Length: 111
Figure 1 (cartoon, helix red, strand yellow):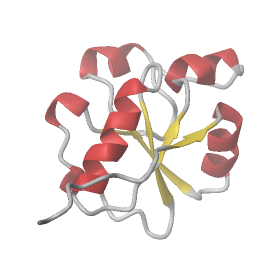
Figure 2: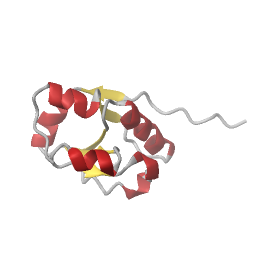
Figure 3: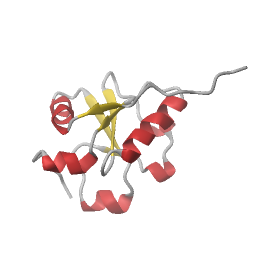
């Protein structure tokens, strides 16, 4: 009998960790919020792939960088990690607290 897929635990990264890794170009940040949300505000440099139509195959080659998911509060980004892992991809990190935590840390956003 085949075992059901069990994703690795999603790894929580703080806003400060994500910001430092982005600045060093060691992260490909994938924002899974919807277009109406990202139109208002987003983290500079994030790739936009809404969870409502999320296809892990659409994530470009990260070229050695770690793929990290983000959303508004961390719920959808954790789900995106689970979906990517179910598709066989080793992407298990997300921005804990999402853009809410990012802004609370005083980090920049763009509109």
